[in-house]
Image (cartoon, rainbow, N blue to C red; front, side, top):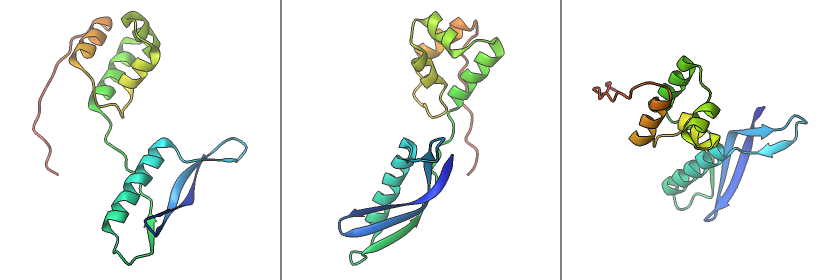
Length: 140
């Protein structure tokens, strides 16, 4: 369960209050704290606020906004291929001789570092081919 809360930090004599930060709770409603992703986002937000702060400012109030990177299209395609072949990540790991967490990382939408060698090996296990396609970017 995520519940918005307030995060405060004091750096370089500046008090920073960030409101509406998602906090993780366990089943007993005990607050566990912030996830690693939230902490990274807070660090980036605070660093930017400190860089932009007027020197005489003693307090900053910020609204937390989740920074969510776009899902990696290669990871999404790998997930689609596994579903199509009705193969689990654990089965791919076993066939490739790697651990299941390695395959989990490849399938993670946050992972953006797939190597061609790995993709070819996965494709071989799935009895598929790898096709690379470059397309024009969409206008922003």
